[in-house]
Image (tube, rainbow, N blue to C red; front, top):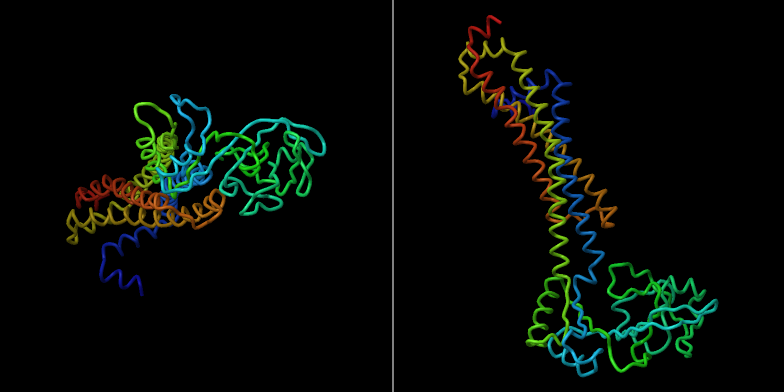
Length: 378
């Protein structure tokens, strides 16, 4: 039924499809070339988009953060409560203070030199793998996983820091290299438990990287004059460099896909030329019974476009399946397609159809310009 409707409304398209089905093996191989080309472009592009998103997710703490330390023109080495209050007045976001020093930490097995962090809001920076970090934390210590293994301590044991004993209330999850506070081989205690007159840094968490950039600019403008009293830092430059690197990678991946598409285009050109030669007599008959050159040209281009459209649709379908597998691996969600990732399926489809059309131009022109008498004689 579908073929009859197609024959009535689009006779040239129906005739072109009938011609393609005569040589099914050759047609299938030509379509396969387009399919592979589309998969190469779309799936490689989606891999690049998923990799970029995965990387940004891993460094989310950094990209959404602004960290402030004493500047090079500051006359102090650590922030006092007044300095933190000045930072707090300059932003509407919560200011987290961090105190850091190195000392010996004694556990069940040995004494190890380790970093001790005093955090005003530990839950904003660390998470417990064993035990629990209470929302209101006033006593006890949380130990990083590597240090806990070295000291042979776990939840409920005790560690000694500067002669004072702390009960271990949690063993922390691995912090990773992208964390602002590296706690794998460190101890975290509540800020009031650290005997110090100041804070080494203050950290502000924003809702998004863009919000963090705006906050950093506002803080720098308000807190500093001609001198850098407060060193305000964000990840804007790092993200710009990362985006530039990803753009180069995307260009390379698209280049690989374009080469595959070029090979597919050459395959279609070969198929169409072979079809033109084999059907020279048929084309002569068409011209003899009243088909114009434009009709023959349209017929051959329809064949090329059908090859491209069907091959591109199959390529897009396979690319989406591959994209789901990539997303499941990198983003832990098969359907986590970004707008950029889906854009590559459109790019692949357009490449497939356009390359097919261009590959069919010369064979179509050659067929349309064949003289009917010579074609019938051959």
